[in-house]
Amino acid sequence: MSQTTATNHRPNIVLIHCHDLGRHLGAYGAAAVSSPNLDDFAADAVLADQMFCPAPQCSPSRSSLFTGRWPHSNGVLGLTHDGFDWDLHADERHLASWLSAAGYRTELVGMHHESKTGPADQVAERLGFDRVDTGGLADVIVAKSDDALARLAGAEQPFYVQIGFTEPHRMSGDRDAPGVMGFLGNHVEPDSSKGIQVPGWLVDDEPARQEVAELQGAIRLMDDAVGRVLQTIDRLGLTDNTITIFTTDHGLALPRAKCSLYDPGLGIAFAVRWPAGGWTGGVRLDQLLVNLDVVPTLLDAAGIGTHGADLQGRSFAPLLSGRPESYDARHAVFAEMTYHDYYDPRRSIRTDRYKLIMNFSSAPTFMDPSQSWNRRCTPVVSPNGNIGSHPAVELYDLEADPYELNDLGLDPDHAEVRAQLLADLADWMASTDDPLLDGAVTSPAHANAVGFLRLPPGGRSR
Image (cartoon, rainbow, N blue to C red):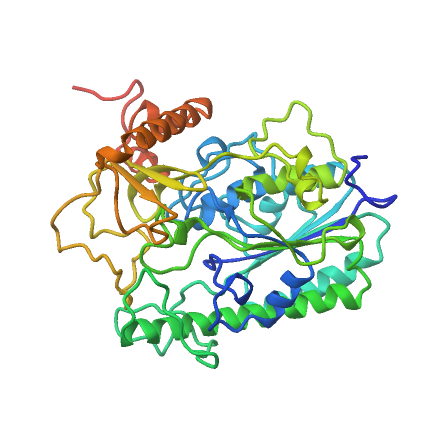
């Protein structure tokens, strides 16, 4: 067993995740957000102040969270649901598979978005779950989670329960204006009980305030649901030897956040509590972390060996256990986007001080692949119609410019910084076999379309 394991038996693991939250919680300074349950949880857990996702989109980020590998390495370079059809490579190993092989009972409840959509039994077999029960909004997920936890609590084997909430993702509803997809669906109420806090990279006007009030309401509803799951864990007497995690996939579904490589798109909430292992007390970590570090951390904590596995994350269990001297700290975190609604490949590197973004297409600056709805928020730096394209290289001083509004990519005073970051980014792309280095990446939709052409054996005919 790893020295991280504080008891004579392996810990249970409950991993709770939601859509599109970023770090928009009271615990991270979002003063107008009503998130009392998660704020209380964070105060009793270990909170990562600099946890980032490797991709600002739902499926690619989750693919890394649950495999410990970069999206371009594990095969999920875009969305996995019908119509997009990206999938994990056949030999990729999900966290559930690791734990199942070590004797854990494994169940998935709610959101599944890290591999190709399919029937529950196929998803279970592919990923390593004993049981998969997807679908449902917050109240349904709470009920399913309660059932799973109660069923597993009395078993001799340790268990892993993966719980995914849809909220605060945008969803259509009867109250939406024509062409608009807000945050209310038909079950969320706007929340301005603590005021309305429009993020600083957006214009604070009435349309934005209406949209943000909806978002705050969706977060409040999600927080209440997570609070009920946490109460169930406590009521069943599971708290002490259960590693309980709360996190999200990527940033808010707002301009310059979701589907962007700016910090509002990549920074994510992450809190973990394991009283028996000493992971508690409201400790805050300030080291650079990325969510593909979660799998090796959990396997380390459970004493499960990974020798020979091609995990690209690194365990930060030493940090959680108060042993920073034993942790190999990252000097930078990397991120990627290839496909969302369309092909718009980008890569980035972020240090404590600087962010460099490499754009591999000439997409116009007004295009935003997360905005397939009619948005109401406007960025402070608003593109001018169809004029201009994303520059090949963007560079930001995060200390002087935390919202990444002043591009220093062509600033001669930052030429040395730019050169070093470009070299580090190139090294990362090469060492992880990023397919962008070999040319444009085609999507499953492209393969499907070619299939419809029914080309003769051997390819094209003349």
